[in-house]
Length: 165
Image (cartoon, rainbow, N blue to C red):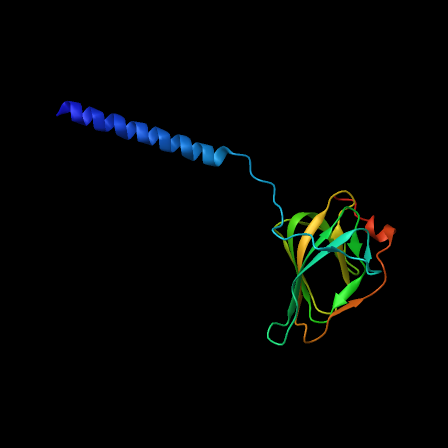
């Protein structure tokens, strides 16, 4: 009887040790670097962007869903022109580090995992930092109200005004 209890105790201890080892391995691995699940899409050739920018159209607006959604990848130094969205815009940063600025306000650093709500009819721009790429999901909301209205390019002076990168 004592032999059976010792055997069970050793089996339990062995299984517990294996479980703890597996658990420790699961939590001590290096985290994977975040990558967007969407392909880059097509290179944008437009006067509304500076630098190299890629766009993958994910959802086009229709009469049921008044949104357009795209995955946009900005290479270092790339950015949009000043623009506004008549129906607003939401940016979901999925990879890297970028910049966002509303006219008359300081530049904000945006990072993977952050969300930016761009109010309707407020001029703004967004893009990568000077040294790092950035990818975001851009959601044009309330497209039945209107779309993006493109304005002048962000000057190098405006873009380089970011000192706290």
